[in-house]
Length: 267
Image 1: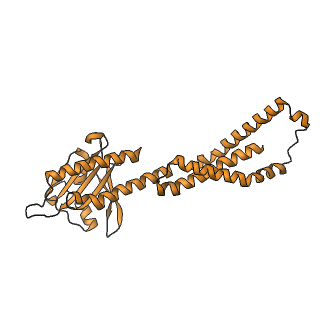
Image 2 (image 1 turned 180 degrees about the vertical axis):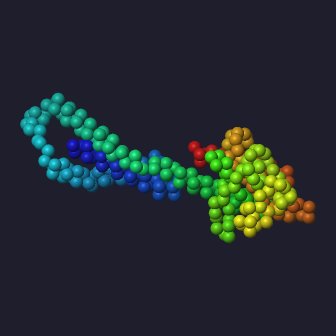
Image 3 (image 1 turned 120 degrees about the horizontal axis):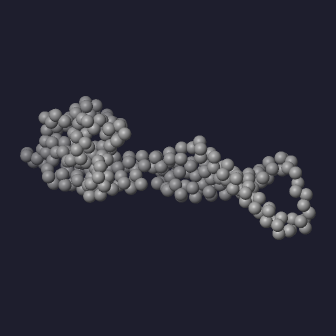
């Protein structure tokens, strides 16, 4: 009975502490789930060392019948073996009972939080820095939600990042996602595929636009998982108001890097 209590407490504390550490330090510092479990075990060991007397006291209050064996009998090999085996069985059953808390926990919550943080870093890098590669005013990373046939992203709305969803059946980014082909347009409003809804939402005016598909396979192969969109080429000269062939090559390389990083996050 005491070993059952020790096993139950050990596993219960380890799981709860490990989950708490995984959701806090694990997400913040990118620790693996196994590392968080190791820290949880440390907490469990400390708890067992400091609270072991509590388990013994509870068992003592249960007034369980005494075994009635003499010291000489307790020293017999078969008695020692039976005692050891009984303790092992008690610990195993206690550990299994302590694991029942997993039935009421969201065991993938921490992993989802870590992936969300990694995706947020991708969005931040694309939106803040990538537009400088091709001298564009703005950049957007759209990710494909296959279950809803939608593209979703985080765009700046009155200096605040907000999640935006659009159907893949409209817009230049949607056309790029459907066809899996690069689209480069000099005048967005002259193209029938352009959807001005985002401009209306953000108060921005789109002129030139380029979209690059992001594909899950290596070497730009496989199905489309997202789209990189650049808006409004900045003028360096009188004739340069649109994205060039060199811009297309640079963004294609960027798409390969984003796809590779997305695969790492997904795994």
